[in-house]
Length: 155
Image (tube, rainbow, N blue to C red):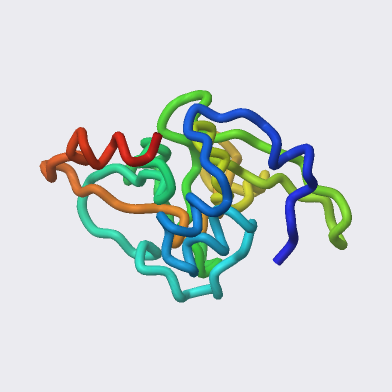
């Protein structure tokens, strides 16, 4: 797992918390992915296979990131999507220093690490957002959204 450069960590997001606050809010496995740019093992995520229609939210701040309509089976072992729910909900950050260059994806609301995007998607977008299940929660269509008090805890 790599550690973000300090300049990335200093970016300002709508939801901004200290590392201590994030540690207190998130279980250790989610903290490792969302705040330390970790990666869960392939085929281990609870959201790899999802039936029905709904919305995938950031597990750190609750922002709506992806719809089930954008999800597809990539065979990689991580949930994959061909597009974000709306423009500006997912930020892209070029990474250098690995064997190959790749593009990290972050939640635009809190800066949480989601995974990576690749230019090999099977749809007309040509994109494959490869996302850690631990960075997401899933809200099935028809389920109530987060309570206002719960949403406020993310601020």
